[in-house]
Image (cartoon, rainbow, N blue to C red; front, side, top):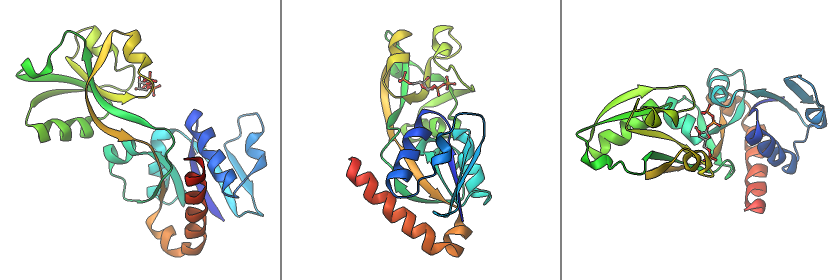
Length: 209
Ligand code: PRP
């Protein structure tokens, strides 16, 4: 049996469709209700929904053999897992954004509000800019509006949140998408099952591309 951690929410629904298309369906997952674990013994899979930012914790510690996590989470927390496949869904960008009139280059020290402290620190270290980092847990777009920060480093998907708050992208740091990840010892002990699943998923991803 493969234990699979899926990120709950919109991305999770999209990701489950990939597993289904790859032949790892689990019809009970579509039941409404608040159940968190779903199993299809015939297919040898057990799915569970977890908070997207927690998937890599379940996989790293072996509570899940495999899972799906955003590249943003993998870069930010560097979990000790294998990254098997780019699922090419949940596509977005990690970007620096600020008020339209702000020119970050003019600032000696930039006040950066973000959920992604490591990604932001690495980026500014690379370009050699001093920063004052402010860790937030959500609604990061408020920070420059209330002058808590000069810029934010955050995920931009459609750009609607920025637009509706009169902010704009100043620099795109990197593209982000969902990745199939595996626990390192599961990858050894369940090698056949995991390789078979990853190969079927790869085909499904290419079909949808
Ligand atoms: C994410 C991100 C932005 C928004 C970007 O927030 O932090 O706020 O989505 O999407 P858009 O470009 O399509 O508008 P999330 O929904 O994860 O909520 P959060 O504020 O709790 O981080």
